Image 1 (spheres, rainbow, N blue to C red):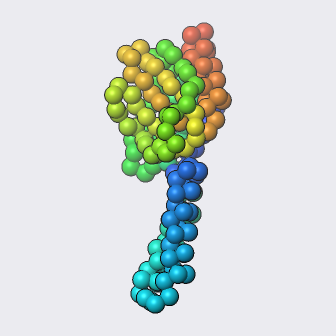
Image 2 (cartoon, rainbow, N blue to C red; image 1 turned 90 degrees about the vertical axis):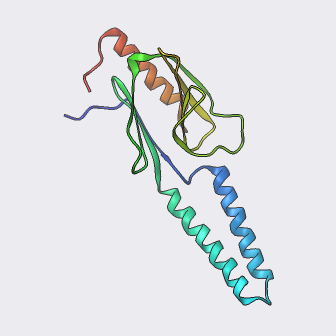
Image 3 (spheres, helix red, strand yellow; image 1 turned 30 degrees about the vertical axis):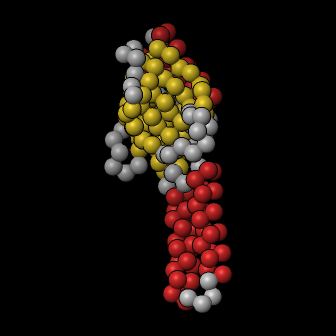
Length: 169
């Protein structure tokens, strides 16, 4: 019998608007250089090939799942791209759930399970994130396009665990 999840979201690698804009500006540069470079046939063809290649890679990245977030009755599971390990966070150990901006920077690189300064980051796109603090003081920062719904699902699961209604998973 399959368990019903409280929340499920897939984050795609190529759908972040800022990095998509950067790639399209590079494509525009390549095509303008292709158009203006009339004398040198070899470099002209190279600009065209690079521009088309960037477009093809961008299209492939739009459909590439970076990580999937699932909130079950007892665990938060984050499964990553291909060779990444499954990260399973016990909701019983979570003491604080906050919805805050992921970062103040405009450009944020996609990361999966990045350990830095006592924080573990997961990010693909979006402005908001859910900040989870466990009993040991470790902070998980999980970027989401649906951060409010994600935080609400975690709070519901934690409340069900406190009330003793948590199903086995």
